[in-house]
View 1 (tube, helix red, strand yellow):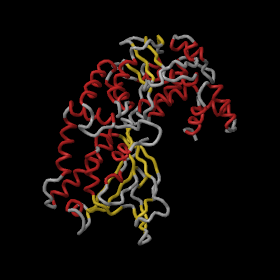
View 2 (cartoon, one colour; view 1 turned 180 degrees about the vertical axis):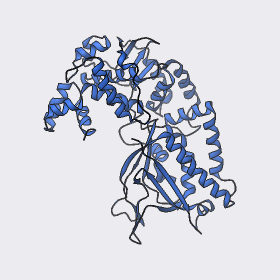
View 3 (cartoon, one colour; view 1 turned 30 degrees about the vertical axis):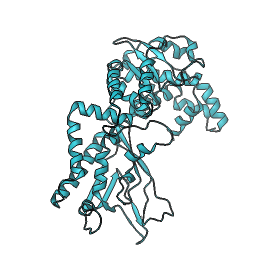
View 4 (cartoon, helix red, strand yellow; view 1 turned 135 degrees about the horizontal axis):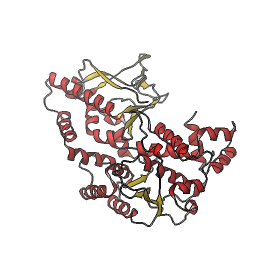
Length: 426
């Protein structure tokens, strides 16, 4: 469950540095629940503290400059993060010569993952950060905590007669944008694309807002983070063409038991996905451990051969996609995956999105990003096709590579899916 995010600044005297840095010198305390990111060892005095001596001004300025990306830009790949992403999401980018906590913020749209890594054991720096954790905070909690921190810094600057600053000007702009529906929509889309404010190509934004009318607002929130910043216009055109492909006609008849499922606020995406998968297996009377190709095909009313390896699949497609008719159970499946297990997993993700997506979404994208909606899809697909209890029973405490491969074959999933199921259920 999400934890409480805290940033406290206790003002202290300082007679060096830039004027804004001097008057906002502080003992800074940052925590996510019981995890303290500012838990440090002072290597000179050989003491341990839960605060660090820095200036609050550059940190507040960094939060203000990157507010939209911190709040709305998800991780778009599973590999190394580009420098532009790191500058907007990793706290050491606040700079000004201070040794900042090695904290990274990553949004999934609903929540923010806060991660912290300890400093190197033999770091030559005078302080060493000790915390090593990952925690999840609510998006609204992140907003209110950052807002309060920046306001606290601005009050301090006014009290110290610092005059107008870059921070005060920037924060006034951000606050106005957050209150204006059109500006808020634009800034959010820019952030989802990985751009700083006013850096995204104007035509690309217009094209995506046009695409929204076809795909749906929530669907656009899933699509935008998949598009590369380089060759963006070409990627948008390719995305627009996806829905015009022939695809596989399908039809899903949703049991009544799945039509009124609701989750309490704060339930993590992975938990929602697993719970929905269990409910779906029960509603569709799937009693076997493994879902056969025939059973899966029957849920979509498609031929079993739809899950056969397909070399003709477009390798440049940015994501898999199901397109549904408005207010109807009919849809078109546009697979991205080529392997049989990949297509089965992708179909299960389409099934999850069909059940959870807003009715206003015609497009049901299955992407490689880490938004909350994609997390629900992946958790659903894994538990629907390869229930953890059944997987553990099959393995019978034999976690060798060979046995896991056998289990993956039995459940019709990839070995990676089986391993991820085990890893997420320690």
